[in-house]
Image (cartoon, rainbow, N blue to C red):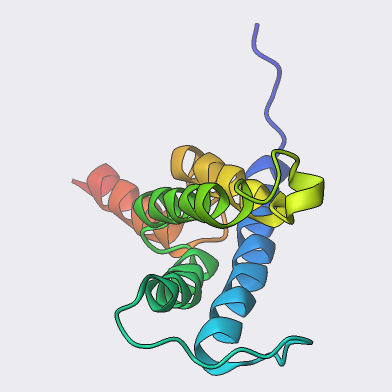
Length: 140
C-alpha cells in the first residue's frame, strides 16, 4: 500500500521553483543592467561574450522558470550553466565551496537539475497546459 501523497507536494515544488527563479533573475539583471546595484559594480558585459550569455540565461531563463513554462528543458540548461560557472569561476580558487564562493552556483545547479526531472509543480503554466490537454482527452 502506497502512502497518500500530500496535496502540498506539488505546491511546494512550485514555491521552490518560484523562489529559486526570483533569486536567479536578480543575478542576471545584475550582470546585464547593474540592478540591483552591487557593492563591487562591474560594467555591462560586451554582447555575445560568455558573461553576457550567462546574464541572458539567468534573466530570461529565470523568467521562464518563474512562470513555469518549458520548465524541464530550461532548468536543465540552467543547471548546466551553473555547473560551468562553478568549474570555471569558483573551483580554480579553492576546492572548498565555502572558501571559493561557489555555494550559490552549486545550489542553483542542483535545484535546477531537480526541476528538470520533477517539473514545475502545481502552480505552473506547464501544469495548466498538461491539465487542459488531459481534460480535452477525457472529453473525446
